[in-house]
Length: 322
Image 1 (cartoon, one colour):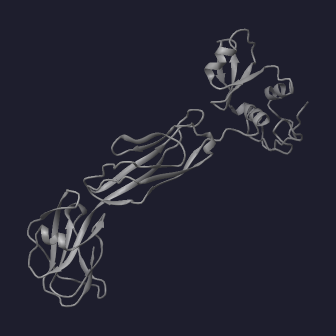
Image 2 (image 1 turned 60 degrees about the horizontal axis):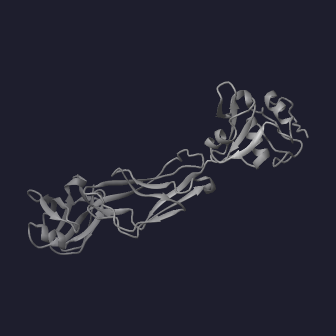
Image 3 (image 1 turned 120 degrees about the horizontal axis):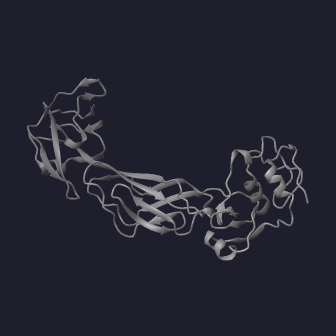
């Protein structure tokens, strides 16, 4: 059997090799791992012998000078030129196949197995149900890490790991499939920031897959409310309406009556302006002397800067913090 290409400039080494079909006298039966090559095919080998290693999804050739099995790689001299198309079907490689740029080994792999090894890739990584949490809040049991993979058949079994990059420890390892559910809580952060997780794995060649990442952001509550007193303490702050934020900027609405208070965690920064978005005028506010320490629901002490309106305002309004 011969194989023809419309472009006759095929690599000569490969052409001489292919001319041996169907006998392929140098090809040994495939093995699962490289060490089996030495167990089965060490003595009496001649130069040119090769075998397919299933675990590596690659061909290895026998180097008779150094007496070692070595992976058969791709080089620029061993690549089919642009426009190389097969005229006949050989093995699993159908007529009309474009082999431009493929190495001799890659073409042989297609002939024998119908496809090249396609490295698996994580195409998505998510966490549910929460991606914004309050400082001190643990990630609850039942939280689901989910992901998707291109070419999942080429992922090494039991090789997937969900890793806490921030803490430097694995959340779970030895995983298969496309999801993992926490069976027990994971500690969150005690200050504002991101808790970063990576998804790691290996392919059937035992090469590392490219990592995927997801993060949970931890913020603090900004409190707002109306109150008749001229100062507030931690208990009054807790009685106001709290909004979980990663920064102070935003619009805050108030009902009519009493002074208007805005309590911002010091860790989130200091507002530079308080604006009525309807009129675009500045809302006169004064800062309470000192800061107020208030514990959140997870036992984290938060230091607050407190501002209140100069006057009691009878009408409801919205104040934009800039």
